[in-house]
Length: 258
Image (tube, rainbow, N blue to C red; front, side, top):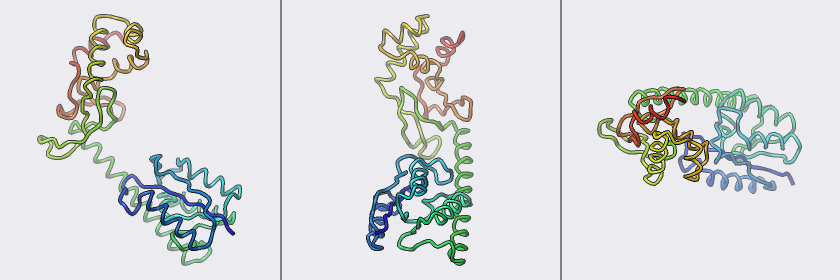
């Protein structure tokens, strides 16, 4: 009996029910059973923010290596977009698996690249998927640039805040904001207050039972006076997107000699 594995991945833009990891796993197992192969395991990149547009997919790369070593005979996916959305990477991997004798099944259909019609259709699908992803990336970059000019933070919230989404009337829609975490805010305020009195970062860290690196990072972070960091520089945030924890004057004071 041939041994089969399943590969699972979700796209960052396609979290709908039909592509969820649970649904993919159920479908893959059903197809393997229907074909009469023995299910071995899943290679799951669904929780690793693995982009199908790059080769940086830990479990996918491990699956290809295990295929090279002959650990299984077939790979099942719900759709070949799981194999990657760059057409060159996808077709390269499909041809490699064909050369070493590992079958690839899309749903309940075996992908036979030696069939001219199948090869043509899969090549067209791979190219179309690649172009669609390029368009999505371009739109995302344009959207992020526009949001940044509006003062909407584009990065993750640092200590003292949490990431949230909220409708901001002056912007007219729901946007990403940093919401203050009160008990963390108090710690940030104490650190800046003590440093403004010329207490050493080492003593502050030791006395407050915090790491020196953490204290140093907090003191260097301009987010606390209403800025966000994006594309290598600080941008002034919309006041309703990042509420200030300290004044800009205090931040400048503790960083003037750094």
